[in-house]
Each structure stands twice: as structure tokens, then as C-alpha cells.
Image 1 (tube, rainbow, N blue to C red):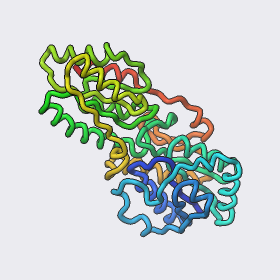
Image 2 (cartoon, rainbow, N blue to C red; image 1 turned 90 degrees about the vertical axis):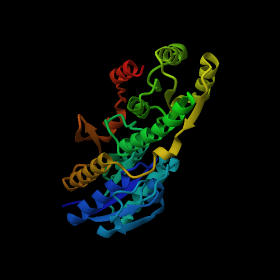
Image 3 (tube, helix red, strand yellow; image 1 turned 30 degrees about the horizontal axis):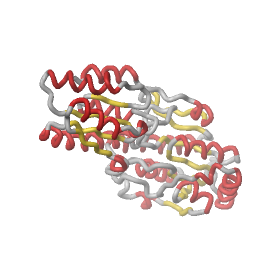
Image 4 (cartoon, helix red, strand yellow; image 1 turned 135 degrees about the horizontal axis):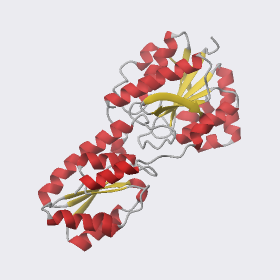
Amino acid sequence: MGCKTISILTSGGDAPGMNAAIRAIVRASISNGIKVLGVRRGFNGLINGDVFEMNIRSVSDIIHKGGTILYTARSPEFRTQQSVLKAAKVCGELGIDSVIVIGGDGSFKGARSLSKMGIPCIGIPGTIDNDIACSEYAIGYDTAMNTAMEMIDKIRDTAQSHDRCSIVEVMGRKCGDIALNTGIAVGATAILVPEVKYDIDKDIIDRIKFTQNIGKKHFIIIVAEGLKNVNKVSKEIKKRTGIDSRITILGHVQRGGTPTLKDRVMASKMGCMAVDMLIHGINDKIIAIKNDKVIYMDILKALSVKKHFDIELYRKALNISI
């Protein structure tokens, strides 16, 4: 068996379930006689040699915890050839055979750069935005949606008490998946996402007025953060309908908290698969979910895939939100 020492790092934004993936990687590796090194704070830790050996007990009682025990960071420095060479040198000095990177597209670009230096890498998708184009699902996405849904349910109580319109901004810079699915789950009157151009008259004001005429007195509008327009929407609703509207930005509350069963199980499956791939000499791949099955694809191909937005689900959401 060629693989003797695996290192793990988490990069970019944290996501609930990352700890479950770390746990699976550590225990699957050790059960196969492979040494595991944890890298603190992403690629920055690899550049600076901030590495420690992990054992079975290193990952006890973490499967239910949000965040990442390895900490994480965004590393603009790793975009430079000098830093990639330094990280590859550290891997050589520490005897690291392979690196498993848990993160998003930016993290996978880092993994691709490292693999070019001869360091075998495997990428595991972990981001609450679910914006990794090659995969239908990313670790943390389910937890983030459930957190958003729970918060919006609470907001609805006060909106209903005051006959208000609540405009709720959820995460998702270029990806409207959280907005779309939580919007359906909470029965939002309107859902605004980056993938679909909206008309404030037709898609918001007219919908509010129509539902007013059939007896509805409180409203929920879900907006993906990438649109950066919650203030404009709020002012227009107040101006055009007279309804008192309030803005709630959920922000980083969506990143934290106990991961759901789905995130724990999917993270564990991906972590075990990453180790198994490295044992069998399969590397420089991204693990992905396709048609609910765990697969893998070449890093370069994975990074070239275009993100698919479920427009049919979006249309159905409009039909049932009156």
C-alpha cells in the first residue's frame, strides 16, 4: 500500500458536518494503518507547517458539533506559485503522501495547484451555499436550510401578530438554493434568487396585492444575499402597498449549530470514500453527489462544470405560494 500518511484540512467558510467528515477520515485511515496529520487553518496551516498528528481519540465527541476542529481560513496567499511550492515542500518534509481538502470551489483550486506539484489530493464538498457545480449536495447545506427555516418560522409569528411583511435575507451569494428551498418550506409569498431576474411589480407587489384580496394579511419574502437589495424591496413594499415591512438578515447563524442527520451521514460517507480512493491509488479527484449517489470526478473537470439551478422547482414554488 503506497499511502502511508494522509493530511486533512478544512478551507474557506465553515459548514456543519465538517467535523463528521474529519472523524470519518481519521478513523478510516487509522483502521487501515495510515497515519493522519491534521492541518490547522486551511492552506495557511500547510504553508506554515501548523500540523499535528491525530489519533482515534482526537475525533471523539465531535460528530454532533458545528464548525471545524481543524479551524479554517481563506488563503489568498495560496494563489501564488511561491506559496504552493512552500506547501509542497512542507508535505515532503513531513512525509505527507496525500491531502484531503474539505471546502468549496476555491479550496478545490488550491488542491488542484498542490496536485500539480506531485501531492495527490482529494476534495470533499463542504459549503452551506451548495454552490459547488459538480455536486448536487455539499456538507452543511441541509443544516443551513433547516436553521433558516426554523428562524423564519419564528419571524412569521411576529409578522402575523402585526400584519407585517417580513423580508428575510438568507445566505447564497451566487447560488439561490437556500433561498428557493427555505422559501418553499416556509410558504414565502415571493422568493428572489440570483439565477432568475425579477420584476418588482409582477413578482412582489402584484403577488402581495393578490393575496391581500383573498384574505392574507402577513407576508414572507425570501431574498438570497447575493442580490443585495433587501432595503430597496422593503421601501417599495411600504410605498406601494402601505404594509409595514421589516428586514431580517439571518447571516452567520446559518453556518453554525448541530449538523443534521443528513449532513452527518453524507459527510461520513464522503470521508470514508476519500480514504478508500487514496488506498487504491485514486487521487486528484473531487467527490460529488450525483442522482443521490456518491461519485468522483477529475478536479479539472469538476471545476469546469456549470452550476444547474432547478428552474422547474422555482416555478412550482410560485404556483403554490399564493
